[in-house]
View: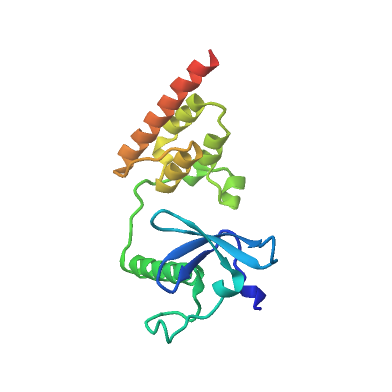
Length: 194
């Protein structure tokens, strides 16, 4: 038996009929000690199935199913698909970046924005200050005081740090969205402390 092909929990497999299944575990039958693959359909009612490991790993009967597009009854899905997707996205972004030159929306004065240590490590000092703030009011104050230094990435990082999503729009609209979220969180934080 090819031990490299034994399914592992969490892996996604594609059946030769193009349905996807997620592996729950490989179990052992209590009476026969036969290994069983326990897997769940990722479509319809999400039923859970058990199939002997040797059947799960078996090749497709091409006489019975000549239209099958894969060698094995179940094949690991995801790695090649994901790698192909990443490669195509990367290639399209490289081509797009060659064709487009984007001017920065805000000019950043690095001498006042970042201290020498933060500049060397590549970490934005405004983000560090925001993350270190003890309360949502402190975070809001940092956002308002450093508003002119905020770029798209910094804004996204700040939003993620408080578990918030910001609607798409202009930079000013997105900053207002983060301000609103911080004001709301600060209001609830103050009520909780009373």
